Image (cartoon, rainbow, N blue to C red; front, top):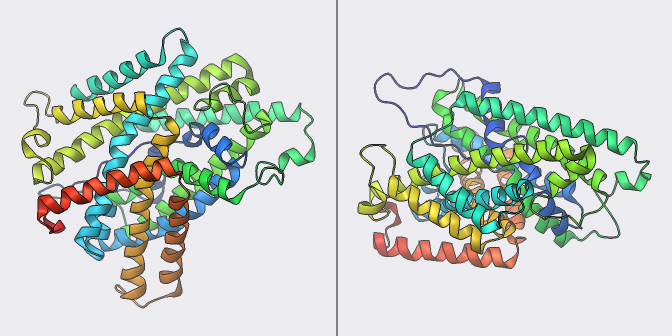
Length: 444
């Protein structure tokens, strides 16, 4: 799961508008990754009592509506492309600050949950090495990669996305072959959507609140607004198409996985459950292939998220929102925010020891849903209540309102530990912001 850096307008001639609609869609798929639902499959399966496909589809509905709001707000603020800006400019600076602080938790937690998952995947290869050793290894790996300024190029990310898509096709072929030879009863093909023996709306919504992690990253498309041909139309369409394509692909992946496994629990390891499903469908070779693919994907995501978070903290330090002497410092040789890179690596290491993958993912979604709700409200106010940029239409009210309601229910359906941890982070940020700015959040 990757997050994009905001595009910064270049001085002088400016950025060229060369990206078309499908360039943006491919970029969005690269950000989210075709294997996105595999990492959370086991956790969601147990939490939703087997209704993983249903949770993915519920999450897709929420994200599609929110994607429309993102696209429309990107029209109004084409050079910014962030929930922080949308909410702060359209509603109130204090609400923008709350949104930004919530997003900061996402950036900080992303390397931590990648560290956790990588450690679990590595154990599948070398079970004799203890989990805590892998946690230290991957946290230090992320620190080392980013202190050296190692970044993956756009071409490398595209190659990885294509390779992951090939792996997905290989898994689906093996899964279809397995299912065709298993002589499953007709009811087995319906259970991934609805099983009357285990269905619980509360459980499904809780599962959907985690499954929405599949789509995290689609908002990065709006950061390219200055480089897009006809951004008023293409950013919105690309954001919606990306969520739709990922949603359909993710639904197919988890549907076949549930048919292969035949149960919604009893996984050898919950966090790497999909890897064991692949082993059942295609034997040891597919087990190794899926495990290695997801390990590489999470290393790339973790390192990228680590550097993005370090840069975000640097920007906040440079502006004075955080202590400038520590967070605003840049290493003179590598030109990277060294203090932030090391701090975030230590946080990822600590997270690997004290957090479960599920709790970390839920806390990340806690912040993401707050940002999504904020963008939906901003769109509702701008286009529905104030009717800016043209006459008011029914969709200007119903779409952002529906997106807000969906996101609110998913946010509310998060488990209590995630809401307590996320609420604590939010409260600490509000107190800090109020003290630092003397109640004037616009200056934070």
